[in-house]
Image (cartoon, rainbow, N blue to C red; front, top):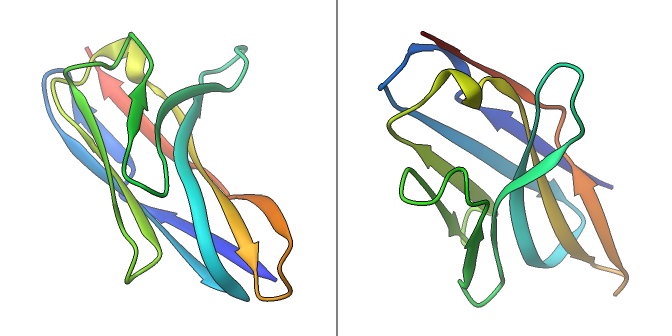
Length: 120
């Protein structure tokens, strides 16, 4: 089994910054893409940022220039640096990872979510 544990959420004023972390542990042989998704109340879960195994990144238009995704493969951890936060960034943030298990199968795992609240 694989677990994804997120941390770093909280309450911040508009214009402020937060850094989210998500650490994967368990029966991991390798990790392909890792990403951050977010879901605001009453809304669907949408992609915020994703990073491939080779380090290629992709961002939602709404966060480009403000958010930076990175990863540390030695720690099986993905980060999301969020700057210039806006009220509309308020959401539960979920990390996801495409994990190659020790048995050789590829499976997507999700974290439990961490709340980010931006006060206006």
